[in-house]
Length: 207
Ligand code: ADP
Ligand code: MG
Image 1 (cartoon, rainbow, N blue to C red):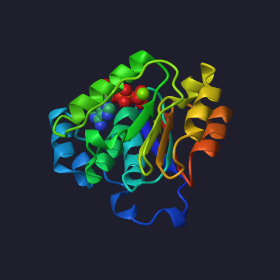
Image 2 (image 1 turned 90 degrees about the vertical axis):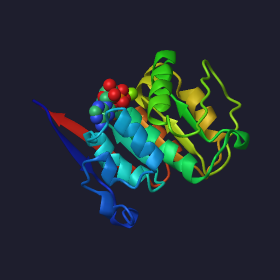
Image 3 (image 1 turned 180 degrees about the vertical axis):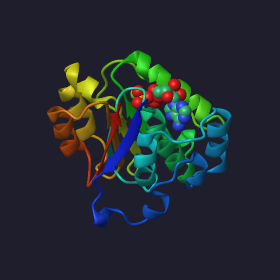
């Protein structure tokens, strides 16, 4: 069987506030809202996957994260949970505009993310919009969250210019979560452009 091993290269200066949650294995051990706990429990999510264990202690503290883990390792919840929690803590409502932007390579993946958001965010009053196709004029308040999902695939599909255009017009003061199945050179370039003092978290599955 597989024995996922999480490795993190967090710097000491970056780790304040994270320590109590490093090594936690269950979602219920994390400092989550009751609404999120309930959504996770009802969705059948109890134990965190390796990438969730490695990244959530950091992302929930508001840090930028570059998370690399293979397909099927649970990256969706690794970014949706911090998005939901951040907006909940900000008491964000639909009149406040766009609270988070999640960019994914395909319509199908965007729909899947939307479904997981609906399930896990069931007890929250979150509204989501699905935007298909190229877009440059996205408005986002500062202090909000940008997620780049499957970044390697977005780049492989030749969207690096559009991605840079979108990222460069968003407020600099934001949280950015970048997830990818592989750590390619172009993913690293994108990380340099879009992330600020990030935690690099790579989960390698041994088989
Ligand atoms: P990735 O984006 O890394 O390819 P997904 O987020 O799509 O992976 O998750 C893959 C599958 O694993 C999904 O069916 C999802 O419901 C399931 N999953 C994710 N996290 C957990 C968890 N903590 N416990 C059980 N199943 C999980
Ligand atoms: Mg995914």
